[in-house]
Every structure is written in structure tokens, then in C-alpha cells.
Image 1 (cartoon, rainbow, N blue to C red):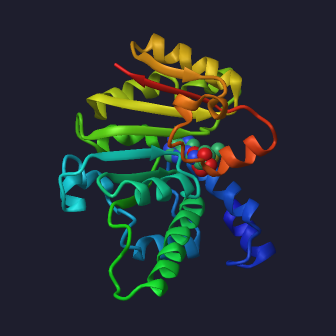
Image 2 (cartoon, rainbow, N blue to C red; image 1 turned 180 degrees about the vertical axis):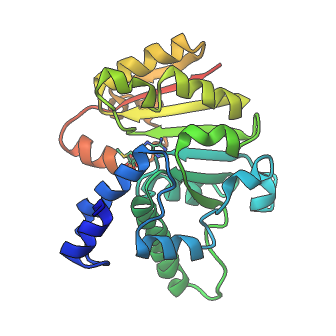
Amino acid sequence: MNFKESCDKIYGRREYPFRLYFMQEKRKGDTGMRLRNIPRAEGVLEAHDKVIKNEKEYKGQWKAVFGNEHPVYIEIGMGKGQFLIEMAARHPERNYIGIERYSSVLLRAVERLDKLEEEKKSEQEGGARLLENIRFICMDAAEIGEVFEKGEVKGIYLNFSDPWPKKRHARRRLTSKEFFARYDQVLAPEGQVEFKTDNQDLFQFSLEQADEAGWRVLMSTWDLHADPAMNQGNVMTEYEKKFSAKGNPICKMIAGR
Ligand code: SAM
């Protein structure tokens, strides 16, 4: 009996506790498979007009997807979408794509967007979507070179990326030199990678990896919220709110080449 079958037997098909959904997805994620195995998440994401299916087909065509010439920004490891949705609301002159590996997590972002739009719509006349400049993709960021053309992305946001604390997993960190090489493939020449974390070891690692990968750290701080210049216009992520409320300083770097 496999993992899914044993969960089905114990909990019933649609009633696993969230942690078990996540474990089930994580197992599949570790094999690099697409993560669309939760019945409710699968259905909602497939049907949702803001979730891009077959994303590799749009390589080089992202401006056509949005129907305008605005620059495209991506957030990798978007989580439940708080940061991305706020950025899209603040910057209608930009397009935003959120990338998240787990469908169960992406589902939360999609539901957040729908709820926000429902609330806003009930305040005003008409049925038009309020955020036309946002899309989501369920994928492993290791594949971004197959999804975006060279120079197609204007900016990359990495917020509170998983630390992968074991040394043998360092290549999986989204700020490893292997990932910087992937960003190099898709980012516009003047484009920047912006990274925030409260994990100081990961931050130190990231500064070193950017340098090793031949990038320049243009700005950095070990205490973002106490740095008026870097904190100006800062949009807090879900993890940022949680960890700064605990008193952890937030680190941020901006890198370019
Ligand atoms: N950015 C959000 C925030 O700051 O609140 C969520 C942070 S959470 C710790 C990291 C997220 O990155 C998780 O939702 C995880 O699934 C996602 N993630 C990690 N590695 C990824 C990868 N290779 N591709 C896409 N998403 C990834």
C-alpha cells in the first residue's frame, strides 16, 4: 500500500489533516514531479484563470499573456501570496508571476486573491477583475530557464526561502550559485534579484554565493526594518511579519550583474 492509499484508508479521501497533505506533496516534490495531487487543489487550480497551465508553452510570450508591454517580475517560493498580491495592487504598471512548488500552498494564494477581489467588487459596480497584472505557476523554480526566455524577467523576488540547512542540500537553496546561474539565464541585463530572510546563516551564504556566481551585491542590510533607505516601500511577507514580531531582524540584499 503506498502513502496515498494508506492516508485514504485512515482519513478518507478528502479529509487528511493539512500536514499529511503537505507530507504527501513533499514526497512527490522531492522526485521533481508536478504537485497537483490534492483533489480540491487540483480542481481549483486547473479551473482558475490566473493559474497558468503548460507554462513552458509561454516561453518568450509572457507579455502577450498579460496583453501589454509592462515588465514582468517573478516571486519564487511565493507561499500564500501576501507579498505578490500587495505588489500587484501597488504596481499596476508591472506584471507579476508567483511561482510556488506546492499546489496546497498555491491554493491558499489563489483563494486569497479571490477573496480580496470579491470584497472589492462588492464595494463597486461592475464585474471586471481588479488585478489583471497577476498570474501564478505551480512548478519547481529549478525549471525557470524552460519557462522564461533570456532577459524576459525584469526582477526576481526571493522571500524567506527554505534554508535547506544540510550542507549536502546547499544546491537546493534558492540563493545558491546554481540558482544564480538560472537567474542569469532569464533576467534582463539591468534586472535585480531581491532576497529577504531572517536566517543569518542563509543570508551570509547568499552574499557569498552571489559573489562566487559573479554577481554584485548592490545593497544589503542585516536589519531591514531599522534601515530607512532600504526599508522604504517595503512590502512585508507573511513570514516577515511572523519573524519580525518575534524580534528577529530581517536581512535583505539586492544583487545584479
Ligand atoms: N515567500 C513566502 C513568505 O515570505 O511568506 C513563503 C516562504 S516559505 C518559507 C518558502 C516557500 O517557497 C514555500 O511555500 C515552498 O514551497 C516554496 N519553495 C521552496 N523551494 C521552491 C522551489 N524550488 N520552487 C518553487 N517554490 C519553492
